[in-house]
Length: 454
Image 1 (cartoon, helix red, strand yellow):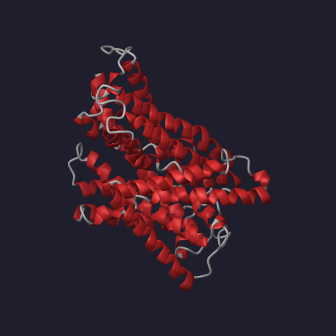
Image 2: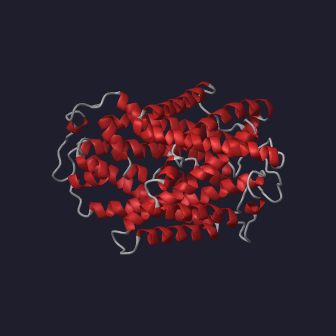
Image 3: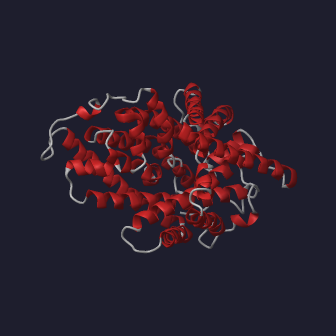
């Protein structure tokens, strides 16, 4: 569970996507990662409070349903499912691009092969998903720790051929060369890099001790994730001039090259491929569990709650991967139009989810304080003031997306996705079965909260 929490939040967005953050904010990217990390940390604390009080395979979708209403559970559940089936395709395409340098096969063949392997892994059992994610996460964590140790020795002058030098933090236009407003512009990109930390709260329902697992994963583990992000970014901008062309391509490879480690590019390609496979593995898992939870409440086709003899929701897994297969095909047939639109239309969904988690925690906390205070063994800090501050922070990110030119398209297309799902709920309310107002499944015997036995 601890490694799932780490693996969910550390993806290719750190190793590659951090380059665009550094280009936007310069060395002040450190501050951007600190602020974004604080928002995500508080969100995980809110979510952890609810999961510990009442574990559920539907996680924040079920809590939104119980605290706010059926429309909230339906909306955030389907948006989250859509978000992750698109990520399945995005990560498969990214992984194929890395493999293509080593294996002379068409990109679409490699992408399909990666999806087939990760789909098969998830179809076996939840144990196989967990074991794969453990080893994927271990590689990523080992790479970051190695970078923290070697990079730290380099900047403090303890590495062969290095000297005590922090001049890159200020010598290329200052600490915030593009102005302090660039710090907040960069937060928009950084928020998405932290996305995935919430996966552990979904997996918790299938663990032996969900309360204990989530309590540990949403506090101590998230602090370590932030340390990995902030610490490694600090070393990158200290070692590499922020305005160098190599930063945008791959900041960590650029740092290793300056340190003088042979074969750094190949090693980082392997680490990035591992990060991609980790996210792909998690995306298949999460999308299937969210569809399963939706079906348990009558918000998705009934057939998707059927499980195998190992209690694996096979149909829910295949339903998500089918969308992934189609999206991969579109990535090669229409990369600049249809596929780009699909990616953009899921871009701001994570922010919608974070805001909904805050709103759910506000209402559920008050309800639990009245009805079952003994369940509140893990509490959000400075409630309710900090919850409101965090929600306001995410709303500010959405406003920033509307202002920033290269983020505006993602916001508006994501709002289009939100409108479609809300319209679908309206149709479901008119023509479908009566919505379930609580977070409990419609048929507890057919859809237990723990989807798969450990």
